[in-house]
Length: 251
Image (cartoon, rainbow, N blue to C red; front, side, top):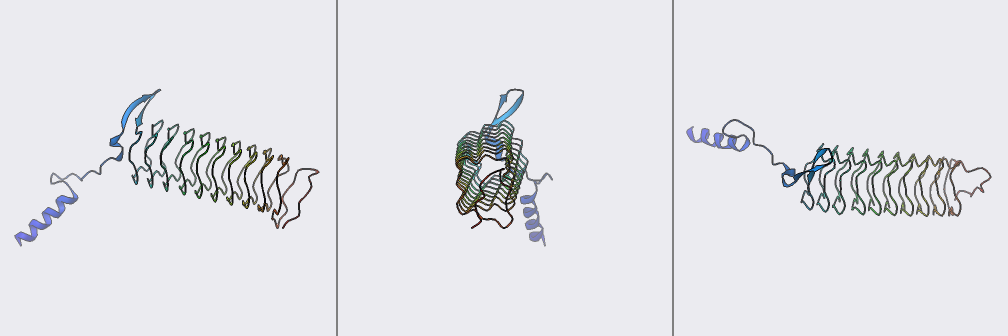
């Protein structure tokens, strides 16, 4: 009986401290140092290995995460407003509902990342790799996505109003019901993209390639389509074309 009691006592000490306090989980951000960033104290995590870390709802406003490894990190609901993420590895990271407004993600590797419902308004995503990423319902208002790789990305229902998508690669991307009002899609690759019910108010589509794109019910009435390629476009419900525009037949 005494041996059983001793075993139970040892087991409990693994779960709680013998003083009665729960064993604290190590803070993954303990590798970071604080620095003054304007009026706030921010974290310097440059080059840190935070792969697989649990950073749900973490306060990383203005943080320096340049070159950090955040692969497969859980950043659900994290606050990354104005953070520097240049050179960070965010492959397979979960950024669902995270706030990345104004964050610097230029050239970032965000392949297959989960950014469902994330806030990226005004973010710098020039040349970022977002291929296969889930961006459904995300806010990319006035974000800079020039030359970004968005092949196979899910942008359904996303807000891309005022976003710069010049020369972006949106091959087979899902943009159904996306708001692309005032967006710049100059020379963008939209081959085989799903643009069903998308809104293109005052959007710039000059030189864009929409070969085999799906345009069911898309509103292009006030879009600029000068030099755009529309070969093989598909629709059951005709899109709304600009006035006096030659209507290509559905394939």
